[in-house]
Image 1 (tube, rainbow, N blue to C red):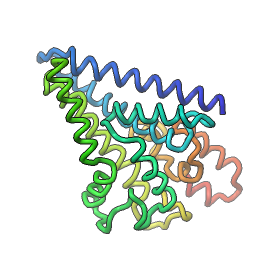
Image 2: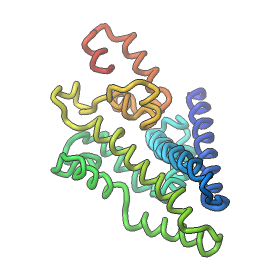
Image 3: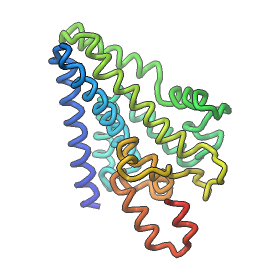
Image 4: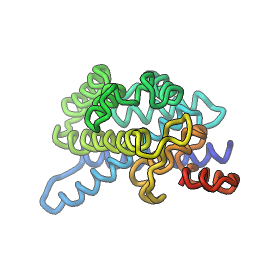
Amino acid sequence: MKRQMRISVSLAAAIVVAWLCIHVTGIFFWHWTLSTVPIAIAMVLAQTWLSTGLFIIAHDSMHGALAPGHPRLNRAIGATCLTLYACLSYATLLPQHHLHHKETGTAGDPDFHGGDPRLMGWFMQFFRTYYSHGQIARITVMALIYTLLLGAPLGNIVIFWALPALGAVAQLFVFGTWLPHRERTEPFVDSHRAHSVSIGPALSLLTCFHFGGYHHEHHLFPGTPWWGLPAKRRDIAARTPDRQRVKDLA
């Protein structure tokens, strides 16, 4: 548990620091010229991935996987990451996410489609679950503080904060919700009603911090942090004599 906390907190700190560096540089110090446009594009792509990481850190906090045995630390780090990401409420999302694990793939699952399994219908259900009028009001207040009090250009706020946040929403939905929980030709292997997406470890990390490629493992072992999911699959494979079970998890 101490090793898990040490690694998780260290990785969380690295993600937060990297996110803040791009955030502050892009919003307050960025000077637009033709030569800086490619760099800005690279920064937005990196910030999109890091924003996804902020949400995943908060997600691990909700399961107590970030700092096992330290609920206050989990909550403090998780709430901070959600605030940085898009002024989301940790207290609101916490019961919703645990309900997702309890009622996975049923009408009681807040992450499941509300009767419309098509991509956009499901996405709108997902968006309504995680983004509220209160959240939008909070982020609007922050944008006004940035522009009116701190002098940040509104365009920079949109490009270096809003765009990465929206890109992260797409990543979290497609790779962390839609692909793992949609019904396929092959049935779900158990009552967790979750698939692991068939992509390699590197792509799994780049798309959604392993919550696409190892989603079933997460539902089996929610106390495993994001960085430990590939090793958890290997451990399952080593301990499970049933070849078909190993194949399902792969």
